[in-house]
Length: 170
View 1: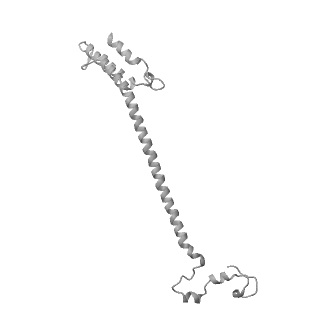
View 2: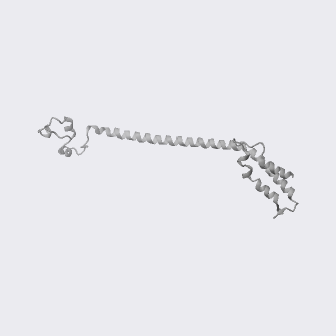
View 3: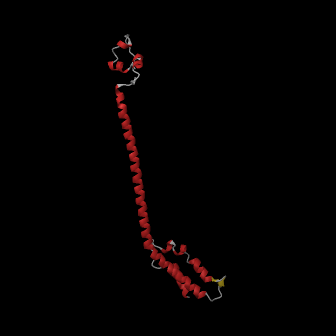
């Protein structure tokens, strides 16, 4: 509320507009109008509009949260499905090659076991050469990176397996 610099009383001051005078009820008016909202101004009808605007904003935010969650879940589901698909393809492609290496290692071990079975190199029921072959042909050594090219394709000849094949023949 502004103060007037004129010497006139507040009620007859010319610097105040009539609307300000109407908006400020007197104490007597407030006592007489118990049923009405005493301090309501012309703009108070906008409270419902303001509340509904806030409600719409909250609903929009909630809607945006739901959309964001669904998009994120869709993305995660898509990535997971793609990874599983690629994993299956990788398994389907590599399993036959791995099985072929495993069969070759099994043949080498079987030959060594049969070949060395009757000799006196046995130590606790197993022959020494067979034990060396089991250690030398462990999966971590057979699948070592040195036996694969840059695209992780096996080299045409697997040097470790070829070395043990030669030992079996001798």
